[in-house]
Structure formats: C-alpha cells, structure tokens
Image (cartoon, rainbow, N blue to C red):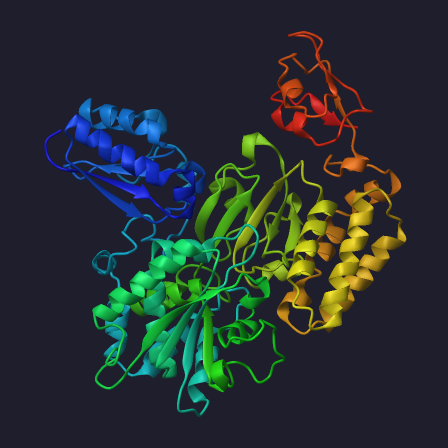
Length: 592
C-alpha cells in the first residue's frame, strides 16, 4: 500500500449523469479515512457509457485496473478491497494492463485514433495533451508552406465527417483560392441527431485536438479568425472548449503571432440556440450573424461567400480532429485503415436496444454486424435485433438481413441509408418500424425551417399518414401516397435536411413493408407498440406466476391469482402499454 495511488474518473456528460461527481467525493473521503495517498483526476468518456461510472486505479507499480459501475456507495469497498487488501474486485473488473477481462470485444475490434486520448487525459490540461503528441502536427506543419498540409490532406483522402462526406482538401482549396482580405474557419459542433453524441464526447474529452485542427485549417486557407459553434444543450463541451481556447491563447498558440510573426489567428466560442437545422452550414452562418437559422441556396458556397460575406471553411468536430491526426502521422498512415474511397476511421455512437451502448471508433468499411454484435454485444437482455437506424433522423432503417453492409460513404446509400454524422440507433424485436418512421418524420417536421413548401408541407403530410396507419385507419393507397410524397420532398427541397427527410419512410417501406401491411390489412401491430392495434396475452405454459407483470401494470388489467399461478390479462381493461412484456423474464407475455 506504500506510495501514491491515482484514480481517474470518467467525467464526461454520461459519467456525470451516472454520478461521477458523487463517486469522486466518496473516493476522496474514504481515502482520507483509510489513510491512502490518492490523487484523483477527472477525464472524459472512454466510450463504454453503458458501464459508467468508470474508475481507473493505478498503483505505485504503474499497473492500471479499470472498474465499471462504481457508484458512490461502492467507493469504500473498492478502496478497501483493491488497495488495502490487495484483492482486485474481479467481478467489476474491465481491464488490467490493457488486457480485457470483461467487455473485451468493446475495445478489441476498434481502431481508436481520434478517441485515443479520450478517457485518458485531463481534457482541461494542455500539458497532458502535449505529452501524448498534442500539437506535434502543428509544429511540423508550421515548418513548411501551407500547401504542404493541403496536399497531405488531399493524399489522405479525408472526407468530411459531418455527414456529406465532401473532400476536405477540395473545400479548403476553394476557400484558399477565393480572393479576399479576410477569411474564416468555423467548427460545426451543432450536433442534433437523436441518439448521437460523437462531437459532444470529443469536445468534452479532447478539445485541444479539435482546436489544433482548426489552427491547421486556418494556416492552409489563410484565415485570421475561427469560431466554434456548439449547441446550447452541450454546456460541458462548451466549457471545456472555452478553457482549451484560453489555455492555447496563454501558450501563444492563438493570438497575434499564432502562426509566426505577424500571422494572427484567434478563436471564439458561440453557443447555438438548439435548432436542428443549424447543423446545415449556411443556416449555421446565418445564426452566427444573428439571423434566423435558415439554409440558403447554393451556389455561392460558403467557401466563396460565407460568414459576413467572406470566404469561410466549415468543418465538423470530428473532421478537425482527423486533420490533427494527419498532420502528426501523415497521409499514408491515415490511409492504412479504411477503404480506397473512404479511408480512415469513423466514430459512431451506439444507442438504443444495445447491450454495450457508447462511443466507438472503427475503420471505414467495418460492417454493421461487427459494430452491433462484436463491439456492442448484441441486443440488450439478449433480445433479437430487428434493425438499425443509421445516419441521424434523416438516415435510413436497415434490417438485420443487411447487417453485412460495410459502413462507408459508398455502400450505405445503395441500401437506402446514409452515414450521417455517426449516430447508430439499434432496435430490437419490440420496435414497430412504422412507428419508428413516424417518430423520425415527426422530428424532421418539427425541425424544418419552413422555407420551402416541399419540406414544410411534405413532412407534415407524411407524418399524418403514418399516424393514421399506426392508429389503425390506414388503407393500401396510403403506401403509394407515402412513396409519392417522399419522392417529391426529396426532389424539391432546398437543403440537405429536406432532401434526406424521406429516408426513414423510403427505407422502412423497402425493408419492412410487411409491417405496414399488417397494420393496414390485419389491423395488427406485430411489435406490439401501436396501442390501438395491440393486445397482449400471457402464455400459461411459460408464466411462473412471479407477479412482476401484476406489480408493473398501471391499468389493473392483470389478475392476481396467487403466487406460482399463471397470470391473466383482461383485454377490455389493458392499455396495451407493453409494460408487462418489458418486465417479464420468461417471455410469457406476447402479442396476438
């Protein structure tokens, strides 16, 4: 027990929501009580959000042990067993000296480049960032003319990680060549996709990597000013990026001579107001200028006429972090992972009905199956997975039969989906795909800026039809009408939000048409999610009479016949909420 110990606590948004602050206080208090010399450090999220609060203990010998689900009430036992008794708490152990014990596959199949420092360093420490090769790429780049990095990014084949996949070097070249006395670079941190948290975790866990990428981009395009636009729902990300900017300014990395004598570059932070459409670059520019966030017709593109009518290069958070990596390691190393046309890695947020939800980084070309099963561990509670929704609310829903599809910019569109910014929502066999399409179309309807009637009216009309089908009033002609409307919205909308808004409808019509037909022709929701079309029964041969469903039911629809006796559901009282099915551990509750 002699010597200092170190405890590193995951304190990203997920860790804090799980109680990381209370765990930190409990560790500190118990270390004092037990007489342990303990240094406590906060870090970002290491990615395994499903096992927060994560605590890594490092002893005087340098050996590290990573523990999961350490709530405040577990802190005393952790220190007592691991430090005092020298008996590692194996049942809660995740890693030892980098060798996985539990949840091994979560890390085994990843290619952690951009996330390499997340969950390792103190994100508010410039010194720790530098200790792990931070700002090495910037130093190398400033020793050469700007076009050298532009060429390297082009050779690397880096494509924008915000969703569109546009070649980064091509965007920079356009901005660089547009005549102007002033240019801007903007970091788009307005991540609004349901189930997406890639940019948030990067800004919280490794903000200097993003800032370094912005400085490098400014050097190439000749910009003197940069702006980081972060959605207001990300207060921790905004705080850590603001502190990174202040630290970089103090270290001379920003300011009047940031890129050399007489070559200024500085960065300021702007908070967004929460509009999903402001993720579109021209709407984002309008929001920064104090205008309503409405996408503008292009051309001219922002690289020609952007912020304050000056040439502007906009890239998202992950793209800038990739630029930092390329500057440090080179184009050839970047291309060593991924595919020919989609090189490098991509970060995905695994959310929904998944056993190991969290943030993962894989090489482009990795299949959906590898991400969902090898890394994510399959369905939560062992349930069968029906589909994934990939690419954000305007992405597509792909069935389990298409899970061997590679995740890259070429393969996904052919299946009716898009890469998007990296959200991947997993749905098990209790998901109704008609209701899923309705939810995402409803989201896009609410978030439409309303400028063009195709998007404004088309999304509303599709939502109305989907709602009618979910409520049991659908007719067969609705399917043709949905197809026609989706095509019109995609063809006639002015911006990317409207053009991709039909994807949830078109992909579910393509891959889950049988569910639409069951709703319309049989007046039945096969998944048991649409209440007016669902009736639950309890199989007496599977029910063991544990009464969990009876305790769960808020309608009083389940008869209490005695412990050990099969439960029964009164159909005329049942609210079809599905709560009984959710708590049943025997699979006895089913849909008829």
